[in-house]
Length: 250
Image 1: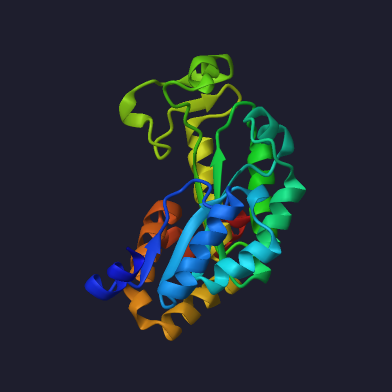
Image 2 (image 1 turned 90 degrees about the vertical axis):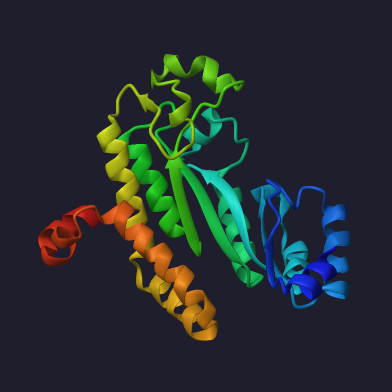
């Protein structure tokens, strides 16, 4: 099938929408071997649990065309991770991201804020942790207790929960911990995007992508425009009032 995608439709890049593509190591290796043999020019990305990757597996994935892996990190605070039932340790997260970097694969970190028990201090800890990792891309969404989950039944114990289905998309704020406000969560989210993407290594990396593959220019421009609208809010104040910018980025 992969060979047909390349020959019939000129597909050069795909994403495996598997929450843990690397979980079954044997299956993953079989797929990598097929891709190396049948589709050597096909690039791909996927998602993985931090415990499911290791240097050897990642090196083979790189040979098979893998260029990016997304990891569900969620928080940089161990207590929040434990409360979410992630069953991972901060050090395991750091190790997985380092392994991915060493293999020459880009990594995307997925985070959530506004979790049960969240405070301004734990949100700052999460942002600082994200900045300390060698991540190439970053996404931060709002904690959302989905129907059918344990969190959906217990959310009201930890905060104000709006069960309007139109808000259960991780983009709109539907849950607010008792010691936070929606405004604070939104402000922290904007600050997180700014602090991550307005760093010289990230900016230079995207410029390098544009130079090496000009076809990426439009996609990166669109992403930058969306980031600007989401994160900056009042662009004029941000760019023309240095004192406001410095205070915002602290």
